[in-house]
Length: 112
Image (cartoon, rainbow, N blue to C red; front, side, top):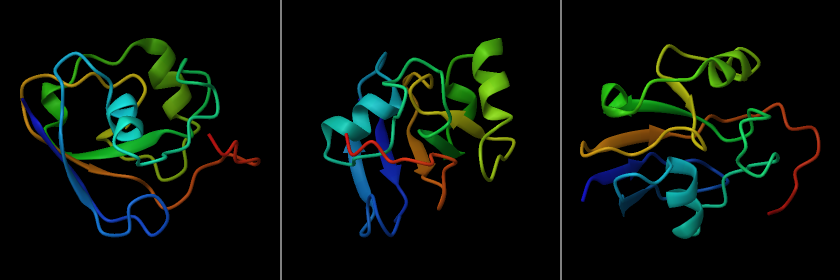
């Protein structure tokens, strides 16, 4: 099983974390199942950017981005070349290092 290192984030994961990933599962679902309550205002259907993450290592192992994800990412705060919507980034066999950006453009946190 791939290992997912979550870099420290002051709100969602202050200490950082090392998680066991499951091939075929999204990064977002993996975070939520491990009590890292990343925002996901659209309920993980690629209709917002609140689950935006930056994949610092292992980016190339993730599946291709679909056009809808690319269009949504254009609206994300702090967009980088290795940005993904965590609800659309499906874990493969390779280890990942993931950073949750400091901000999102969610004007009303849903408190999922």
